[in-house]
Every structure is written in structure tokens, then in C-alpha cells.
Image: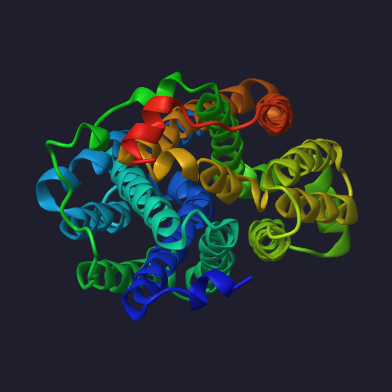
Amino acid sequence: MFSFFKKLDRNDKRTLITCFFAFFCNGMLSLTMGSVMPDLKAAYNLSDTTSGLFLSAHSAGNLIAGFVSGMVPLWLGQRRSITLLSAMAFVGYFMMTLMGWPAWLFLAFLLIGFGRGSVSNFDNRMVNQVSGGSPAAANLLHSSFAVGAIIAPLVFLYLRNAFGWKIGLAFVLVCGCISVFNLSRMKLKQDTLDRKDKGNTTWIFLKNPSFLILAAMMFCYLCSEYAINGWLVTYFQNKENLVAALAASGSDPVSYSQTMASLLWVVMLVGRLTCAALSAKVSQKIMMMVSSIGMAIFYFLMLISSSIPMATISVAGLGLCMAGICPMIYSDAAIFTNTYPMATSAILAIGSSGAILMPTVVGSLAEVFGFTGGMSAIFVTVVLLVGFAVLNVTFKTRMTEEMKKTAGM
């Protein structure tokens, strides 16, 4: 699993560790949004539609970052640009604690998405470059995201209960400051990119069917993941038959829902480490297809579950199947991202465009049909993910002649 790490020099190892910690903070940012949403709604009297709009603003920030974070390094250099752009996420979280005007909170979520997207763009591209596109490295990177996602709801719940939800956000802000400092201290072998090199700004890879299939998979996956992360806690707190079952057993729906958010990412961590170990023996295209099918099955079970054991098992199975899909998409796309810097921006932007839509769709449908009806919309994107994953297995990834020329092959 760690064979790729032994081949790196000391500076590259430090770069990878910095990227891993930044992704750990990204995981915290992601899950804290879902955990704090019920408190934001109560404190600032927000509707479900407005709350969904904020989650979509976060995804819109991700989409903008897909383009901006790929271009800014051409002028500022990679180290300065990621230091500046990543700090925006923590500015957004600080804004949440100050006031509850809808426009103000919309901007806060937009900045969080922008900072998160910039780190995602930089980390995935940098890890692919340093490791030579290793699936194990990609899964370990995303495992660090899962660790942050596991810790965040638990720490937030403890601090919220002890001191209030605003103090619950303080832990995220402290870790964010450490991450920004680490990024500012990196020593990159190629910090400044050549603006005159057309390979650094071209979008020719969009004509490659293999890239478009992977981008479509990212669209469907992020559409599903962002909506699940954003609404899972609220969904379980509003699922009447499950709330009744929890009441009958003497359990607290708030604590249970926060625990399920952590459970989802505990099994995702296990799944990503498992994928990293299997990547040397099993085709990642096959693993993505099997994982997508399992994701569809367990998500359907979560929607129809009415008992505590079934709901818990479905969340665990869902997290296990979701685990390796995103990192393996990035790893499978390394043939493009290591040749064209804008390819990482494109695949992130395409994925984020779907994530912009789904949280708002879920919130809007929930007001009309209830949260089970709203969450059912996510199942459509999961089924589409299965279709594209099957197509990805049957369609071999190939470099065009122009790509070979750009890569110097």
C-alpha cells in the first residue's frame, strides 16, 4: 500500500503529508456543514428551501474554484495561490458565527465551497503528480478526508452540547489555520507555471470520450455525496417512523443522526484503505463499477428503512460502497490531469455543477413530499452513476496523438 511513498524524496513526502492534512480539514468542513445545519435553521429561522440554497451555494463555490484555482497559479505560483484560496473556507465558517442574514450566509457558504474546491483541485492534482497517478496514494488522500469527516460531527456534538454551536465551529477554524500555515511553507519543484505553454491552459481533453465518462461519473457521485452529507442528519431527525422507533428505545434522534454521520465516514475510511490495498491486484474500473452497484442497493435500503438496525446497516453499507469511487475517478483520470493542469479543474467543475443542483432539489421536494420524498431524488443520480461506471469498464482509456505530443511521448 505504501510502496509509492518509499520511492519519494524527503521534499515530496512533506508535500504529500501537507496535502493529506489539508484534505483532513476538507473532510471536517464537509461534515460540519451538515451537523450545524439544524442549529443554523433554529438560530436564524431558516426554511428548508433556504437551507438547501446555502448548500448549493457551497457547491457553486466549488464550481467557481474549479476554474479559478486552475488559472491563478499561472500568475501567483502554486504555493501562494493555494495558501490564499484555501483560507477562504475558514473565513466562511467564521462568518456563520457573526450574523444570520440570508445574503450573508449565502456568501459564507460560497466561500467555504470555494476554499474547499481549491484544496480539492490542488491536492488531487499534486498527489497524482508526485505519486505518478498511484491509486493507493489517491485513496490514502481521500482517507484523510474521511478521518476529518469522522471526527468533525463528534467534536461538534460535544462542543455544541457543552458550550453552544458557535463554539462547536472553533475546532474547525483552528485546524484550518494550521492547514493554511502548512500550505504556505511548501517547497514545490515546479511552483511557477509557464503561461506561454498552451498545455497549461488548453481544454482539448474535453474531446476525449474517456475523460467525459469519468467527468459524468464525478458529476453523479458528487451530486449524491454532497446532498447526502448535507441532509443526512436532518433526514434522520425528520423520518417519523425512525424517530418513533428511537423514542421507543429511549434514544435521542439528535445524537443518533450525528452518530450516523460519523458512522458513514468511519466505514468510508475503512473502504478507502481497503481500496488502496486492493488497487495493486484489482482493476480500479471494476472496483468502481461494483461499488456503484452496492451504493445503489444500500441507498435504497436507507430510504425504506423504518427500524434502527436496518437504518444503521444501510448507512454502513452505503459508506463502504461510496468509499473508493471519488479517489479512483481522480486516479483513473491521471492520464489527463498529469498532462493538462486544467483537466483537474474541469473534472471538479463538472462534478460541482451537479452538486449545486441536488441539495436545493432535495430541500424543495422535502417541503412538498417530506424528507423521504426529497432524498429519493438522490437515488436517480446513483442509478446514473451505475450506468456510467459500467460504460467506463467497457470503454478503454486512451491518449490521443495530441495528448502524447503534449506529454512529450
